[in-house]
Image (tube, rainbow, N blue to C red):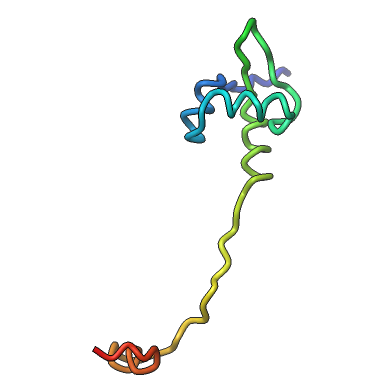
Length: 85
């Protein structure tokens, strides 16, 4: 059984990632989208699995930088944070 895979063009990826097609081309040539990239003339087509791989490798996790301040009321929170006003 053959499985069909969806392919994104270089232009599609530029719109999706809000980058220029030139930037996407550089990432394709650097191999950041993994194997399976197809070149047809001057156009490149990246399989959906390659896009998933790219997203997983470049995922940024935000870590909380501030401990939560427990407070029952807004006034108590302001006093604890010294934001009297």
